[in-house]
Structure formats: structure tokens, C-alpha cells
Image 1 (cartoon, rainbow, N blue to C red):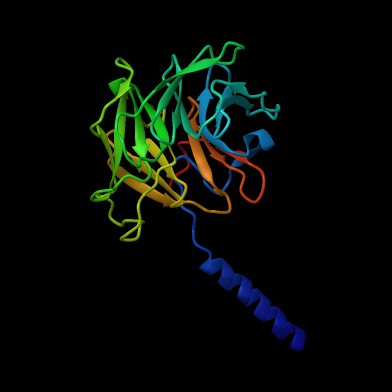
Image 2 (image 1 turned 120 degrees about the vertical axis):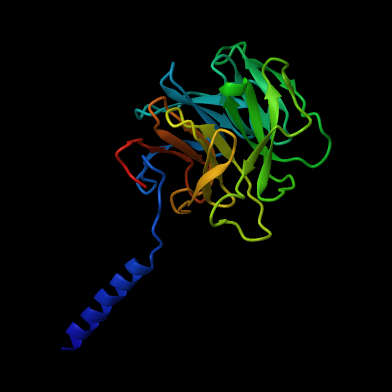
Length: 280
């Protein structure tokens, strides 16, 4: 009887723990609990931005500190050596407009990368037009408006909005007035505490739904917004899976890729297969 008693306590405790475990919710088409992990080496401990290149069938990754791009394959081949486009700097994100590659520094400066993945690879930098303490971590391509958008990480949020500045691909310059807002004010429940700021770390448009996906690493959130930045849904990320998510990209088929910097372990890229049959 004594052993039966302890067995029942053990079973009851396990059942209670399962009941108390928070449910992980996922966007339609994905299961955020079941990624395929692509492990990375020390060269990519500081991985930040990623972009899926359908021509190469590989992810192009940006190293935060060294001004290098890497090719990362999804079929277990080892990543390429780094291709240097600049001597170094605090590069936070990467995007591709179908013609040129662009890397963004934390101060909002944007570099167009020329002759990528060759021995003559180089870059041309365009300065952010405003002075002051700006901090940026995310840049995304907006083909409908022929622009790149950079989202501010630590600018003043106003009324639940995150400011975005437009880089005109026609003029090769960034506007000094915000031309985009990531707006959480319409959500039925705000996931942030009253004095917390939303700090975006990566963003990209879904190739099939047209929605904007934004990851905020510090806040452990995934926000889904419409094309104009109006938030529609928000999901809390499991910190055991998303240890330090700094990059986000999609394949043309809608597969989602998220890069994690090394944090108490190895850096990796998480791959989430897209299936329209998976319901939220």
C-alpha cells in the first residue's frame, strides 16, 4: 500500500504539471513546437539576418560583427565560408529586393552589397538621415511600394506603435519622416506590460498570405500584421526553442525560417514547414 500511495502521488504530480504547462499557440499553417533544427558552427555564433535565396536554394545569413555573408543549405551540407563585403560593424539584418542585397547597421545605415559571393565583393553605404540615439534591428523589402522598411527597436513607441522608416530603392535614400507603423493598438489583448516597448528584431512578408511576420526577440513574441502594419495576431514564443531569434525569412512555398544566435549552446536555424491544413 505504501508504494501504491507514492505511485499515485507521482502520477498526480505529473498530470498536474502537464495541466499547468502553458499551451503553445501557432499561426495557421505552422506548428511552432516542432521545428527542424539546422545547426551552425562558431563562425555563425553571431548570426543575425537571414534571407532565403530561391536561385541558390539556400539561406543567406549575415554575421553580426564581421561584415560577412554565408550560404546555409537546408540539406545538411555544411555552410559556406564567409564572403566579406565590409571590414566589420554592428550589422543587424539583411534583405534582398530580387536584384541587390542590403545589410543594415544598428544605427540605420544601409549598405548595398555589390558583386556578392565573389572575390570582388564590396559595399556602398547610405547614411540614416537623422541624428540621435536610434537603434534598428530589422529591415524588410516591400515590393508593393518599391522600398525597404527599417523598424526601430528602441525609438519612442507611441500609442502602441513602432516607427518604421522607408528607404527608397529609386532614390537610394532613407526618408527622415517615418513612413510605416507597426501598430498593436487594435489587438483585443496587448501582450506587453504598460511600460514595455516592443523591440522588433526581424520581419518579412509571407509569400502566400501577404501578411507581415515580425519577431521581437527581447519580448519573445511573433506578431502577424497586414501589409500596412496593423497587427492582427500575436503569439508568445517558447524560450526553450526560440533562445535568441534574430532573423526571419520564408521560402517561396511558405516554409518559415528563424535564426537563433548562440546562447548557452550553438547557434541554429529553425525550419517550420508550411501546411495550409494546420489550423491555429
